[in-house]
Image: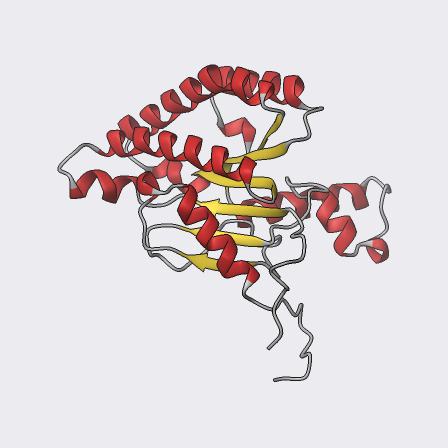
Length: 244
């Protein structure tokens, strides 16, 4: 099997990460789950710092799923508090470092003040080009596809779209991710090996790397190792290239 020449320039990637293991990290230390989530914020900062030094153009992080709303009320409140803290404390640094900030997900389910903070952050950083950071908040892949199908149906009902004209490009335009490029690499921490309703449409041809490290312990060397694993693979997109 042929691999990419390590001496050749590497195209910046879109990397998506399922940040898993905060609760287990805390439980293993006899600490409350909320402290695991706080440590997860530190891992997020380290990951973003590392991403800016690597050939990564987009970083999409699975931060809060639609299923997470079912967690105990106290934990959800703490997660929302941490989100407010992150948006307030990190926005200036993100903007200064040229990071474009975006959010995908069902914003109607988020507290109104957080929605306002997100909109302000997106407006402030919309022209930045160093790296695009996308947080998936109140996000679920099935919910995203369902929302897209509902939007398509309404467009057909209004006569704005013919059913025969619907193809992959049209469907993509109705997804929360819109015209954003699909992820090249999806990383999941904590040793679990599943997508958990994350970027189901967009990950059709992504490579997957599953790491045993819990998210609060994730650091730049883990991200770099995952990219090395990615570059060691041959991406076929359904073709055989001489082998079955």
